[in-house]
Amino acid sequence: MNAVIQGKTRANVTDGSLRFKEIEHKYVVDDTFDLARFRDALAALGPVRSYQVRVRDRYYLTDGGLARRFLLRHRFDAQLQQLTIKALGADTEVRDEINLDLGQHAGDQEVQVAAFVAQLGAVWSDTVHKDVDVWYFPDAEVVHYVASSGERSIRCVEFEATRGDTVDAALAIVERLERATSFAGHVRAQVSLPQLLFPELVARLAGV
Image 1 (spheres, rainbow, N blue to C red):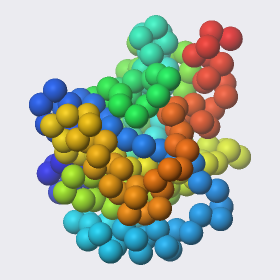
Image 2 (image 1 turned 180 degrees about the horizontal axis):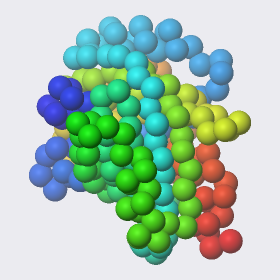
Image 3 (image 1 turned 90 degrees about the horizontal axis):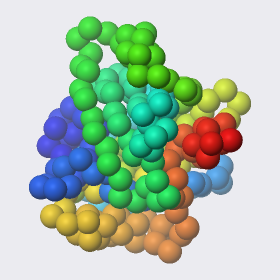
Image 4 (image 1 turned 90 degrees about the vertical axis):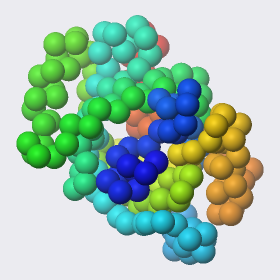
């Protein structure tokens, strides 16, 4: 994840056959979540870098995505701009994630991306804004965020491995951080953030 630490390029496990895999645990937390205590626990582990950022994510479901179970996401924030394929499934613990770096030299490409995706047959789209705390470690990325879309909002904590020769090795990294921050044994969310936020997307994926 060297590129991630230096330029906040969105992380995948960078080793071998896991290059285009996202290995992550997501937890939904409520408004009573003690963010200050969580920050202290992560600081004690010596992150390489930490910061806060506001992110805009626009998600798209296309005809192909509906058939093959993936979403497209256009991400834009103060540090990066990406177009990403994110696989959907019964459990997002290990899933395909492929990022294209659009760069920021040409400015926000929201209109261009929307026109591009429209040609692929977009059948659903919506935007999520996130206020994110990020902690980078040599082998992992941890985030806390509040995601909102209109009147809908959700608060989550995510632990993502960015190193590991095998899925088991990557999950061991995730589990180490969970233990260090008192998340071990908690029930994690198994579906993607858009599925948690948008019931109409869930209905569309179910063919309703």
